[in-house]
Amino acid sequence: MLNPNEVYQRNQVTTARPEELTLMLYNGGLKFIQHAKRAIDTKDFPKAHTFIMKAQDIITELLVTLNMEYEISHSLQSLYEFMKRKLIEANMAKDAEILDEVQNMLVELKNTWAEAMKITKNS
Image 1 (cartoon, rainbow, N blue to C red):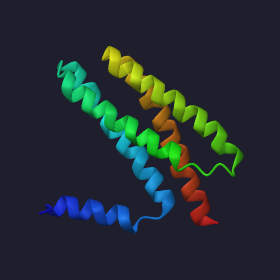
Image 2: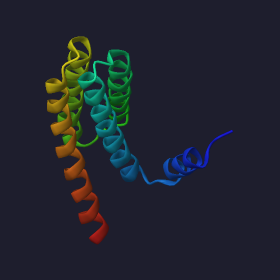
Image 3: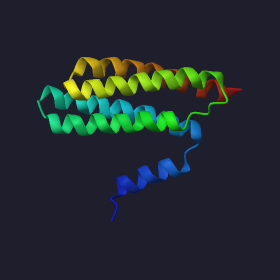
């Protein structure tokens, strides 16, 4: 049986518009990277591995859902592939600095996406 929080989260995802789902993915990736960095700091490497893998899964989801009809998608594809390689590198080395690098890129993408959502909503 699902707890109320899981039910709420599932409803959020199933009723969200595509642009909201992308924002949720960015937020989820940032959350997992933050958890992974904390796990590395406490030397809990199995937990760090799990969180980095979850962040990789999110980047993979962002990659496979790109609409390649838009020119920007080709740039995003390269950026997502780069971030995925960096996550693999961070996981192998258990390196929080590499995670910082990916986190900074994700923050930029998330902020840009949120701003674009605001602009299109107001037009």
